[in-house]
Length: 302
Image 1: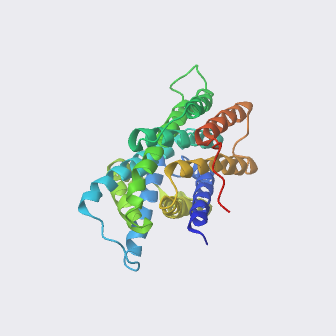
Image 2 (image 1 turned 60 degrees about the horizontal axis):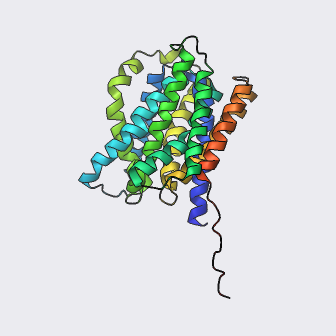
Image 3 (image 1 turned 180 degrees about the horizontal axis):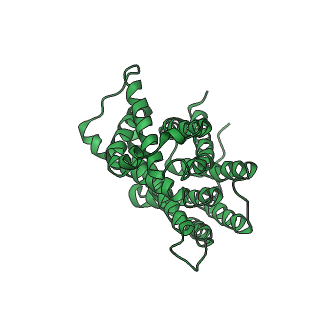
């Protein structure tokens, strides 16, 4: 199969998993697990998995000078990203969270401009404004009367998570050109475990695991191993071939999967605000990723 097609299929698979994760993780927190306990289990479980695989799969040695770069990627892609996502999701609604997450393509564009010096056109600026308007529509739909409300705080945290994830995709791209996905994930999650443990280990130890029913354990296993190990590996695999901006476009699958799953299982309902926010964000991402056709292109020589 063509490598480009494999990369696109990897992104589709990863964002489908992330869309399911929004609904599945919401069913775990906070009734059965505190967000920080979920974070510890997810990062620790994935770290253990990758380091165990190290015993059976050949790995490329990482240069000492790249370890600091990997640690920075881990800070934004694992530590900040995970804490803000799970803490925010526990306070937000699945559909709202999935819509806010779709601002990542716009965030990626901004960081690509700042860090990679990619050009931003007028249509992209309009797209950024529309996307920001869509995110604010969802965030402020929690109500302007109480800015300290849990739902509003959760929406803001999910948006900040989206910013952190966008920065991670831009920062990790150069490393993916040097190392395979397995090697990079092994170190990224190890650094993430080191950074987050002081904030998550205490909550995890005090959790009463015996009261968790078996079907919730299945959901926890999905979040720990499928959402982390498999989805992260797929994302990093795709970055070896495709740019962060192309990767970001597929984030649009997340609200589709999450919304359909949440509605089917009766965990959420679609509102006019959700449709308006989705339309604004969709318009913004379209303008950000739109490429005008070049005129007067030379005809190929027969």
